[in-house]
Image 1 (cartoon, helix red, strand yellow):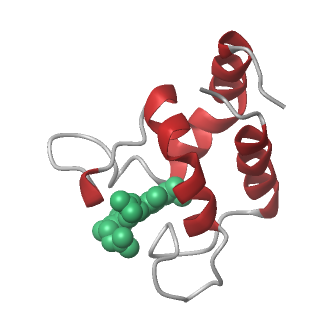
Image 2: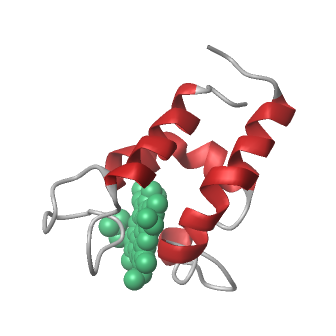
Image 3: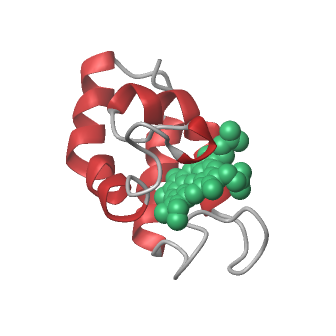
Length: 90
Ligand code: HEC
């Protein structure tokens, strides 16, 4: 179901920004972000959510999984990202 812009932005602020901050932004922000991909704002994350869903759900230890080092994201966070994806924000 397509959601209103403000609902999307609020869901991002409440649930997604902290996940990005904790696990992704160290590489995906600043002057030279990894893969030339920034993940430190609502619009960047919204625009890349399909690719994000792909990468974070790969099998632990497999090629291309994000984050590339350390543990796979917790199930709770994967569920929140999935929910954000299903909101069909644009
Ligand atoms: C230690 C640094 C680092 C961290 C932390 C990190 N990434 Fe990455 N990311 C990379 C690098 C390097 C690439 C390019 C290589 C590749 O595509 O696998 C990449 C590629 C990607 C891509 C593919 C971009 C494209 O153009 O295809 C996505 C999506 C992505 N990361 C999302 C994330 C998410 C979401 C997180 C947090 C859960 C995250 N990354 C955490 C370094 C990182």
